[in-house]
Amino acid sequence: MGIGIYRSIKDILKYIIPHLKEEKVLRLSDTTIHLRISGDGRNVGRKIKHVMLTTVLYPGTEKYNTLEFILNPFLNELRSLKENGLEAAGILWNFELYFSSDWKFLAICLGLNGPTSNYFCPWCSCSKHQHGDLSKDWRIEKNMEQIATRYKDVNGHIHPPLIDMIAIDHIIFDELHVFLRITDRLWELVLAEIKERDLFNDLTREVIVKEMQRLKVSFCFWENKESHNWEYTSLMGDDKEKVLRFFNLKLLFRPSQAQLI
Image 1 (cartoon, helix red, strand yellow):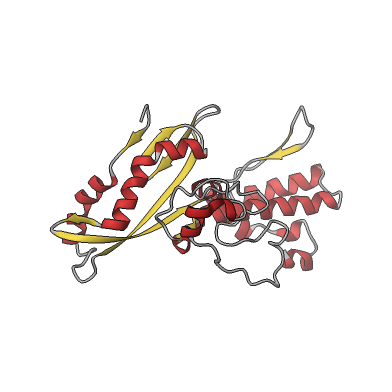
Image 2 (image 1 turned 60 degrees about the vertical axis):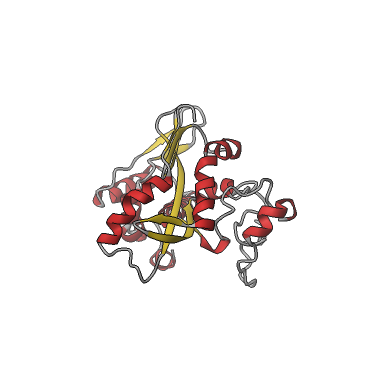
């Protein structure tokens, strides 16, 4: 494993299952354990990146070939849990597996070309030119067996899925990632609307900064010396929620438009 770190998921489960059984979190009347797996990448410096999973940590980047190699022991254990279960505390436990991550990490684990490719959806064949078509009833139409055995025949897939032991309908996005990205996009659209009206000036920027101060959110604008574009503070989770809920858009737009936004 080089300088990466891996802990056997079976060893962890054998350690915690007796305690969960004693605390009556697990009951003898239901021997199925619902186990969620999650993973993500993280920047720990300008040049240092880590990838974090529940039982795996390695320094590196989120790439298919790297994950395929690093996660091999972990994935084999997941397959064993799914197919054979695990005996612990004198009971044979069955497992229902779930997977949760952001779109980028999920795309890699499913062997997709990428979250911004033409066919981007983990569940259906919607293309990026169709995702705004609300007349279509997009449903889960892919299945893991199809992707695992004939991935080249499935639009958007360029590698076999790494998490082939987890059903497509057991794969979900992490709500935090979705909320943060949607909030980022909404704030970008607010600024884009101001710029389109040619009102992105010193006065408007001052109004925005003062409103952020009222919300006790640390925020500022600055001009990039090379590109001469205006950049601004990237908001953290709690601050994003404050801005989304309490920012007074009537300071920037007509009341009717502010209400619409």
